[in-house]
Image (cartoon, rainbow, N blue to C red; front, side):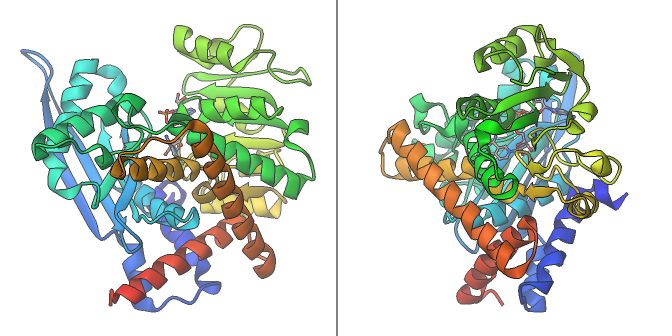
Length: 419
Ligand code: NAD
């Protein structure tokens, strides 16, 4: 099904805005294709008998507005087409949140849970060795994504710095604070998602976020920090999940636990679904709960043609990249459900990545308050810009966001004389 290929979905989304934005055919063609794709084989000797060969990708979609920027994910089903879609979405995201970057993404086809920490480190270093010439603080800057984290970024920074014989912190963002990471970066994507949820609740549900019920799919970096932030804002988080399943509460006040208890359950028992006192549910059931706000924060293609008609939430705020397919978008729109698209809702991560890069280049370190207050302002401004265009043109929030991004990117391409 066409729906299932994220790159096809990204292209369908791009094509959908030609009714709103005039793009010359040659620029449209350039936007459809990544400028550069790097594919590497990564052989990894596991022990005396076993060897693993993984595919590694770095796709650089567009750098008209600045150096390529985007995360690196480790996943057994990561494919070149997934990475192409994610790279294109990064180009739109950096334009909407207004940071001077282009868009890129990396991936390694591997299940890191099957590797020791040592093997993960060796694999990461091999990947850096293989793509060394394609990255750099003024060229392409990586950050954490699915199954990668600040430790992964520390290995990348160290390997790259060794190859260059100098300390190069700005080659990655999302590093540990001790190595030049920014305050607030770990929580940034989730914080931004919850700010968007708050703004969207006010606008579309006419409710304060504190009066809403929320279900969050995924309890990794984005999901868990979104939950933490929503709980602080007073929202009633009634269900959470991870790859192993979910848990929900029928109590009107939501799950009767603190964020710390959820984190502790996830860490000690291997899944939030093991939370005591909650009711076990599947990920499919979580998506169809009767809540005010649904936040998919796991992977792409979760809300599709087959379950979109059963979604009962009135508002979807996309924490993950590409969780809703174009077919699903049409069904949701018919049913009066508003979607705050990924390229707006989860852009807080790349925004604070930009703050980290600026701090690194200036050998500076900002306080958490300074980071968070800039993040909050920029997120609200991006949300309002997209809302304004959506209302002016009578188009949905995804089309409005894409239109703003594509206009900015094509304008930079034209001014630079890309054709
Ligand atoms: P992560 O690896 O930290 O967490 C992923 C979570 O999703 C885990 O809880 C995992 O158990 C769960 N999960 C995986 N497969 C699932 C499935 N099939 N069903 C239900 N749950 C599943 O990853 P992350 O960094 O939180 O990224 C999550 C999403 O947010 C991705 O789409 C990513 O591209 C996007 N994103 C991440 C960032 C960031 O700063 N990390 C920024 C913007 C967007």
